[in-house]
Image 1: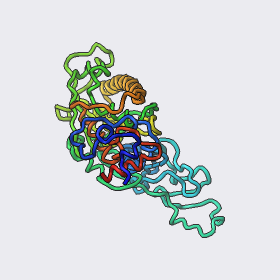
Image 2: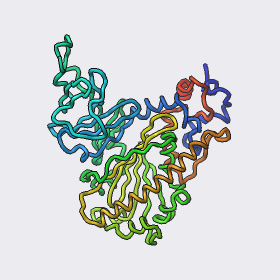
Image 3: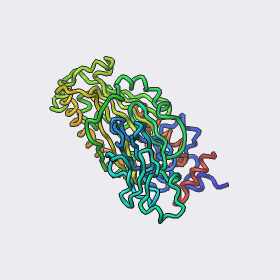
Image 4: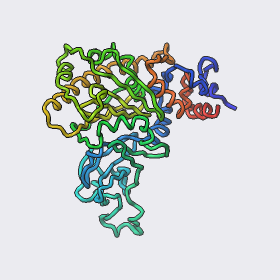
Length: 408
């Protein structure tokens, strides 16, 4: 029988492959080759992104009948639509006639029907095909069987999720360990306070998630966050690949304008328990989603892969309706702070992406401060055992290596 070591080329069992049984003891990162390999990326698409829940929007984004939000992911297109019956439904955003996109843009509103802009096939808001131009030219056409293809949809804590394929825990189950904390924020009552923000980054999606999941780099990588929080950055892991990071604002006033304005202007939000009124929290779930929780607003942060070594960051903020000037000012100061943090992170991950190409680097090593990153890597290995191979498999053999390591 061909072994994983044989398939991987010249690797030796003791130094080039880590047994999946060692998952509880390893402190190694994913191997460098997994961050820029097309075959591995194809497995990620099918096993991670098609089979796991993806956040599309907040319920307030699709508040009225006909409102919709869309999400494109690795060749698949999803649309969430509010029906006349006030129910939310998700469909594949592809016309059943010739595969055109039926709903354009990130968001919009249908005027009573969903009409394909290519040939005018006409669908009801519940996805049923209602009318076809020149219908008699389609002999035997059965409209009842040609509605938009439905997708699994779930609403959890005010956010709307879809899944393209597979089965598994609901988002309610996935977030159960942090549900009590999330309820304090009253996310379901929030409304958008900005538009969807996209950012193209020439790095692998895992590289962005690696950086997002640990605060070990904050003291050197983010001077502003260090001024705001000091070194008090705590991370805990939970079931279903969930992690929670938390930092509390310091009493010491920053000498930076945006940070000082945020500290001075942030009002006390009495609907939150006292320990959450001055803290920033980040709930992250596998493989690519996060909710950022601030006293004055929340945001979702989502990493959308495009290809090995390239991804997009997608984000938008929501808040409870509040017309106080100090709340608006605190939100603005928060955005300025996080714009700087985003720029700093992009510099770091781009540098790492180049470093991963070095012949001197195979795997890295994780500290106890990087517990959420370790959870992310271990969870990914559980879905894709080929990632236990330190050495890049020979071209054309990644899936065979994965199957061999699954059986081992």
